[in-house]
Image 1 (cartoon, rainbow, N blue to C red):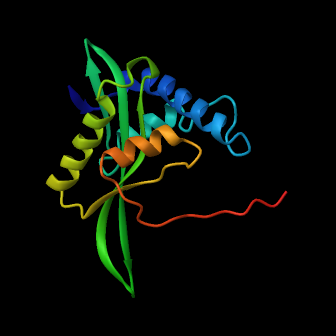
Image 2 (image 1 turned 60 degrees about the vertical axis):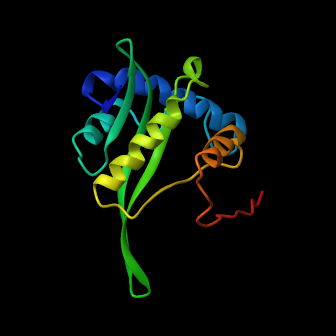
Length: 154
């Protein structure tokens, strides 16, 4: 079952955020710390109160096995067609539950949410140092919208 995250889900979301950081630190230790998480408990409490930035969780046998964090983004400008985008800020499935299709279910749930709520598209960023995530998103039919490049000066 997938549902909106609730305050009692925060400890599990925090544990999953630590798993995400571990993957990113392994791929880019120059950018990501070895320990910590993207959002702390207080930030997550605030996020749960913000309807424009829904967090959905996958629950099985009473336990949260994954989440998808979304944000409403708006594109506008003199040369841009105004659109409403559902940006996937983060998606994680517990490392012990990966390979069971939970990530796909969460993504499709967010995609359906976007369709039902008037969004033009669903976007996300994936780190090139995370080939498993890149392969996962490719399998869902996501295509690059643009490429962000970097030159590291040491």
